[in-house]
Amino acid sequence: MGFARILCSNNMRMAAGRRNVSCRMVSRRFRRPSRDQGSMIEANLGEAIRRLRERQRLTLRGLAGKTNFSPSFISQVENSQASPSISSMERIALALGVTLGEFFQWAETKAPRIVRVAERHGLTSEWSKAKIEALGSSGVDSKLEAVMVTLFPGGTSAKHPTPQPREEFAIVFSGTVTLTLDEGPDEVLAAGDAVSIQAGLPRRWWNTDTVDAQILVISTHSATQP
Image 1 (cartoon, rainbow, N blue to C red):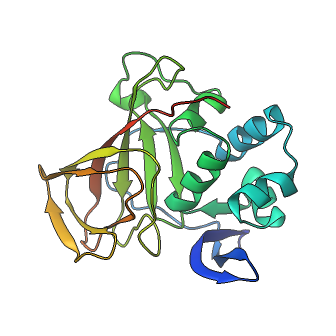
Image 2: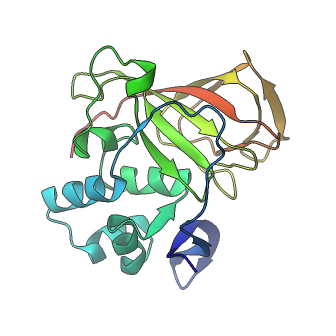
Image 3: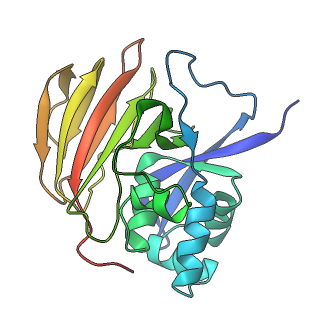
């Protein structure tokens, strides 16, 4: 039996004033779909979170308090023993005062001005069955941030629609995805369809198809640096 990883996501139910984290165990033999994934250079999410946390002189318990996650969950993410969902990554990034794309910079994988398709740096979420690739630099002078989100079949950004603090523009690059905004109806978006999502509006991406779906997401950059 192979080594197991813990896959976790936000659970919107509140218990004793703390947001639960629902987890499930999977074998490390988990294989992401083999359809054309390019040669993405994997960034170390846990190392990036640790660097940012220590830069702000936050303890594990301190960061846990800002995210409403448990200290043990934060520790597991930092040590690559837990694979958070996309929405959980966004929650941690917000607590650290950075964007999701800035994780690449703090993992020492800062993207150059020109990003070749074979040289994209990315993060993988096994829980979300997704990968996120940086398409440009996320330096302090950047006004916009662009990432390519690939949702494999059955992949989803979260269990429920969750808010993102920055305005987003998204266009489906390939495949078909289902988008839920707040409490509205599910909308099916095909390649070429686009949507503007205002800051704070809960949203959930979901791939119910049998092939990969790619979404180009451009968001406004963080106004302040940690």
